[in-house]
Picture 1 (tube, rainbow, N blue to C red):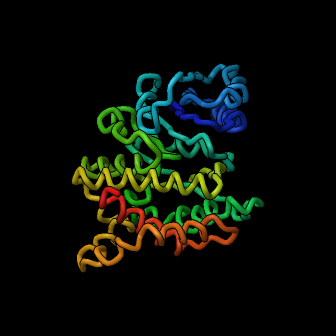
Picture 2: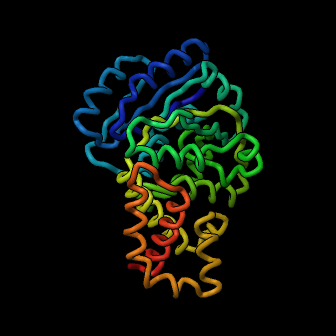
Length: 295
């Protein structure tokens, strides 16, 4: 038995729900789909209103936006079954055996299925940065995930026992975008709860334009600084590791005075039609540095 949990924010989920319902009914297994909308626009609510006609779907809408962590914890109150399958609303399912593969994993505490981006670049030039970052940095092959189960974990496509999530929970201090899954992964590791990996990816369809993606990146970095402040071990994260090396040799003192003006130059490049991921790495490092200095 699986409760399929889909948090929604400003994205059309009609096709995603149709596919899941079809796979669930064909499986002849017991399942339910719970969709909770985090105060989306009226347009999104109208588009998604038809999903409530499925008998297997419970569709809830919130009057206020409560954020990515709190809404995921809210599924604990609404799910009837012992296994929770979380799928992000801006994903698509390409495999006809997607749900079947998760039904085969119900003896595990936590299972991550992976994420992919389409190989073909988006037509819109202002979406190149988000797609490039996705396909070059976020898409991890299965062997890498097996060798690095906690580092590769994401909250976009995973199965978890209800009792485990009730014990750990998403940290509701993280109210904005970014790293809520990092915190969950850290807590799972601390509690010696293994994350199993299977080759069962969803495809990321919600490719934002470059300016929106940069704002989300800034939000994620602010959350990372917050996590770092509460003494959780995030030293294995590449950005933090690089910063710590610079700090060790006091190079941050040299870089900081120039960081603001350099960031403006880098942002222009990243908003262009040919963004560079190396420039993006530098951009994140400088922004992290300034957030660590509280400026």
